Image (cartoon, rainbow, N blue to C red; front, side, top):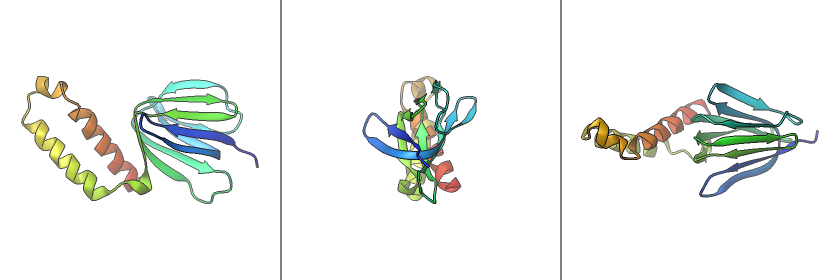
Length: 136
């Protein structure tokens, strides 16, 4: 079975460029799944888990995503994420330590001061990684 191309790209790197059978992404209104020949679409992504099944692969690869967009054509899915990481690369203990540090920093700030930092986004990224690592 011939598949379609899937790219997962962040501002830092291109994580994936593979021929796939199935892509599932977290949309702001729920999960969206794509197969070959899907109608063209551009949509905002929610923080969460993406699943990609390569052509001929027995396993589905899970990715933690934070923010971004998905663009679908009949022969390609491009995921442009603010942050993305394969579930296999998530170090749960390191993420927990990072999360504890962020929560400690946030506890010492007023709401107004906290809004001026990236700590809320960093905390959300840690939460996504932990959810994806647990689910994968």
